[in-house]
Length: 182
Image (cartoon, rainbow, N blue to C red; front, side, top):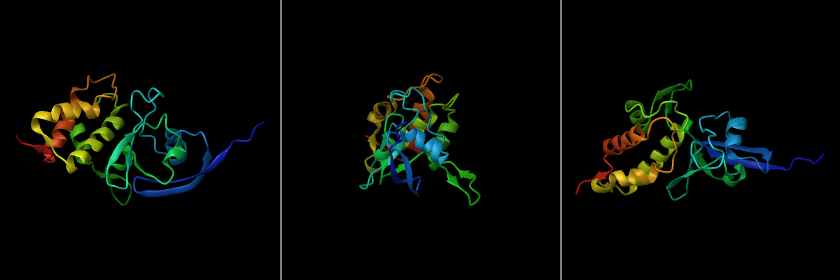
């Protein structure tokens, strides 16, 4: 029987250093998060990177961030990098319980922007990346809906028809003052 090839992985998840952890060379990041870290918020939907229920946020050294589909990206791609999962958005108390949702999560709840919520982590992460981009460069009101569509339009949901996801993102962006008038 062939021996399983492994190597160490070290990264930062939700602000916490992880590793080194010895893992298989071909392990997908979604499996690492689920099986090794107990972080099951990122969902395995299609397994082909199409639905984007699995996305996490990859933070870059220059302060920018991007979505990463982790059902098709090997865990070792993230060696030495920083990611945020859906579990890392809310504020937690000393006992680990959630004490406050972030503005995007609050708007998703306020707008009931989910039904089964299977795809919600991907949408929340995408909206977070969008908000962070708009914090650096706000969007003109005339371009707001197209900007939201560009950021969320690749995500697939089978329950809601997308309207509430878009409304929640728009409300968060407006509440945070990330829209330029005129």
